[in-house]
Image (cartoon, rainbow, N blue to C red; front, side):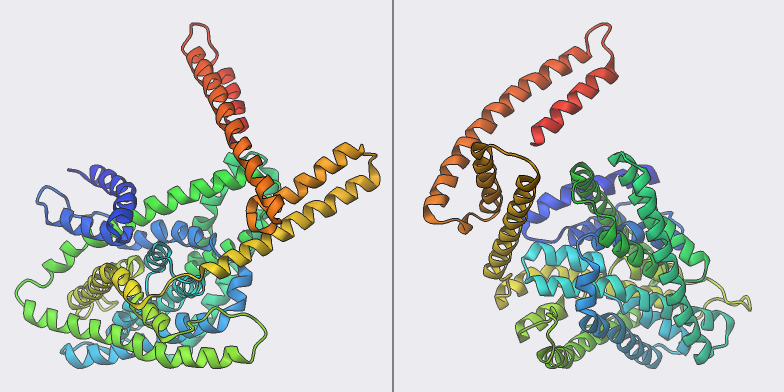
Length: 528
């Protein structure tokens, strides 16, 4: 098996792991990690030959962009304090605690190398957290916190990691310079993210075709990441800013085809890239295991100690942080999404799985220092990092569904239904307002005006049938049954038409371009 065949296996596994995970009740990222481990144990499967410094730039931008599409700037701004407590403060606390323990138990480990280890295992993986949380039916506020933490904690961790690596490689460290680098990295990332977001927004206005606009949306996160990194900024933060800008401003309510096609496209990208990323996590375990040959006892002891620190620090931090967030929330008018019970806090604690970013940072540790000597304890750091990744991703990922069921933490379905009803009401009122505006400038017949008013009311009822009175609900139910029958028959008619047009494509003298244009017209008609 060569590298290309291995990539195909991972892509196929990414697709198959989704329905398999749904059936067995396990998150797809965990299944892909297990698949990677199994592949790594097979003799005919080659070692992964991807340069470590390319893992983050290749995998992280599309994953972050896809995750940001599920949130919004308003949601982030409303929850900035809970996100700050997790994405910034917790990363710092975890890094310092891991560094202190690692330096105490690993003989001769320099402080800078210990901080690098702490930084690369500190951030929970955004993809694993959101993928797992999304499948378990957790309350929306918990999913929002996990998404916000996962999106922004990589920024803090990667900057800390680069500062620690630079200190270990050069042999010098300046706290003031490190602080300045952190601030400059954030400023550059914000500038690049906003500039590229604005530029992409303007360029999308020039690209009328949905295909071109979606293609541009795939290029933008990569461009934002690479440009920020070239200017010594945070590529992760730049991608987040660009994606949030586009999600806020580059949305045309009437551009239905681009929105539907874009949603489908990014679902596909998210599924495939996530699967490949976690498959690589499992495959890279082979390299980490080879470093422990000859001193398994010591290495496993060190890894176990660091795993304990990572897991325990998150719990001990979340308990007072959740209490503090609730106290701060009590005096605010803004609705923050925070854990409301100790059960939700426990679920948040056990959701802190490490993944792609930690793997990439561990493998990207330089082989040598500026003086030409080997990087201090590099093999030990890589093994400990993979121990933390496997313990949190596999152990926590496999047991989190059981824990959620055991604690009875689930989404507030009544609140979601009520919110859906309020949106349905707003949609119906907006339609009625627009109808009155049209009636003010156009002379509509009474019959047509009445028909349009019924349709305006039906917009809300079709979204949330509970809106209408009992008679209206019954009438809507009957119309829905009739409409369903009409759509079934119309679907069969359109299906017959599509089969006929496809048959014409194989006839002598047929013009495939004309046939495809007619077929596209029938496909669009089928969506209505």
